[in-house]
Image 1 (spheres, one colour):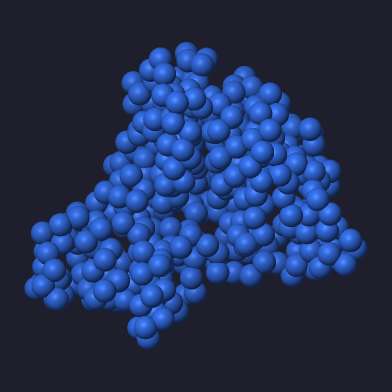
Image 2 (tube, rainbow, N blue to C red):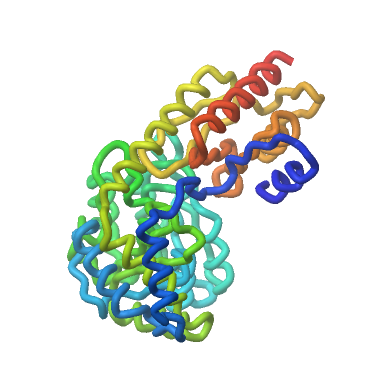
Length: 383
């Protein structure tokens, strides 16, 4: 969808793209300055595969400060973005035929890497009626003899759901009965929570810490997607296997980016609250603007920077151009072609019947995009 939006824009159309999950805010200046100093200071050699000492120390401090997880530098692996942490983790433990439990809706990257290894994705349905959260009984029913791994992502992409302590305690109770199941906790949106408190599985259930890999990074919170820095902590044997995978696939991570990440993690943290306030305002703007859109039903995201409205009431309708909307892909394509707003169909996140809108855009762009979506819904429902 993003590629189609770029092509339309290149052809001269006034497309607003809400399809990419990327902050529109700038990387903090002191972080850019740190990278510049590192480059001028000669930090341009091959990096250690597991990460520089400086960043592993900073990430260990961060895990204790933000997650409540005791960690030393030896308990940290630095990766080329959060995606490589997931790749390394899955590659190091999944054999062909192993099952990986993935709550849906989910980011497509999890599915891609599981299938790359020959593993089998098994989806746990987390509908809007359940707040897009994992139900412990449903999780327990999904675990079988081939289950090897559970992947958690809260705050969630695409729904914006946030894990509460009750949900994690329920998950932990299930996992205690199945000691063969490992868990990846993808906490990349940890600082973007608007309601409730952040809690992660390894902190909520310390007795399971030996089976949980907790990962984060600087991409979302510090607006550093292009710097490609992720990091994770967990059992040392799992980290050692991941380091072997990483050394084979890519070796280490850019030393200049690592220096920048140290500045982000150890520098002023008040910008996190400032930016959370911006994203909360944008969330509220989109919810308010789309509240009157016929055919859309939007749950209230508690975190991240997405809205994930249901579009099922639009199905069967005919757009002004005569297109019959048969599924969420039809709706996303019609919004792009007829309203010039790029979104992503929910089927891309293993939950058809929805579309995802990124709220990581300026207020003015969000207002105009929502006005276009509103007009599209009104004309389509009345056509």
